[in-house]
Image 1 (cartoon, rainbow, N blue to C red):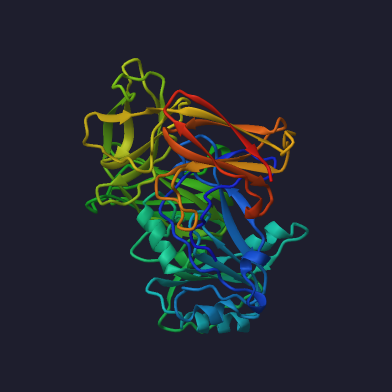
Image 2 (image 1 turned 90 degrees about the horizontal axis):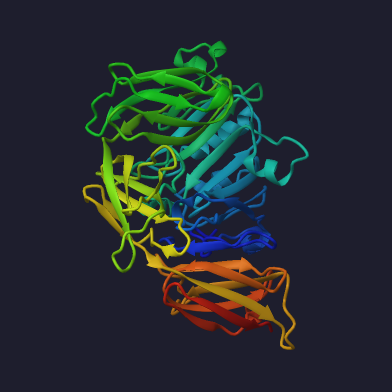
Length: 498
């Protein structure tokens, strides 16, 4: 599998354009599938809308999740002992995520209690410092098969979730909220998740003493099954002190459930409806925290401990390259890091607009570091390479004027190419074999019915423009054209299709 995808986004035929602001994610050697064939040749690609954390523009990015069925797999770099479990004959599907970075493998199985015992015994042999056997109630369906085959529900009885450690480390080091919820910590989690139903006799299983068991069933935690799903935990500050009176909100609208922490910082939320719900924690004087989405069944019990940081109010001033204030600039808080350098997912959009003096105040963020992005047409701010301390008073953002590049494509005899053709723009000097440097800017889009596409909000600099059929071979790419953007300028690049 490719750990970090070389292309952050790629438009599909007839789809929206995408823009790339590169972060530091490297590529891993491809895994091999049936007969040693590259899985890149056999896997189904599914494009998902990715988080806007990595993109300084308003256009959404696309990312890649890959997977397959019961064919043998040989992904490289997994913890010792993983492959025998991954390739059990009871496996019915597998998939790799998360969308940005990859490296977390999910192997899904359907079988009997004795089959599960074999899986547990193999799981005990996997070499991983954060290894847990998770027990949940109810029937679970296959994520992968339910996407690729919607004609029926595909039931699974357990799943093996394991990281390629190098990918986990890259996502953690990016400090941009790319790790899935609950995956933060000192190392990647390795889990065998068992879904107990009438198909599995849990009490007849023998659990090796080396395994840590986390039982997420209501009845195993002293709660009755008639009170609905429950979430229990503690809220504390950065020093470990309890926070009383924090509000824990699960879900929204008619499905919303709230709870409050007591003097010890403890809380219990019950009667949570089945479904996937966002969990948000807020307390007076502290920056709110979005603990993202959690899936609940009617019999789910989950534990969630949350650390809140003191809230900061941060004045910000926006100026142009001549030092003049800019009014009406839309700025979004893209990334927050607390004083320990950990990613802090604040609740809400945190979008602001500068006033006549170019100023606004950022609120409800932790003391630490901020990365800010701009959505204002005509100006550019590099949110990847710029980071600010909340102690700056004010934070000064210098925005650069941008240019426009119209790209048109025609045949050798001058006829416009009007469909199934992609045009791309990248900073000059980028070696495609080595990959684009962190923080570089680029974009790609399908041409319109008139045989052209216009790239807007292009930052100052030198660029290379080219095009090729979509789909198509690299040999069909046009000769490159160069363009220099000074700011507030317009260019028309004409390409000739091969």
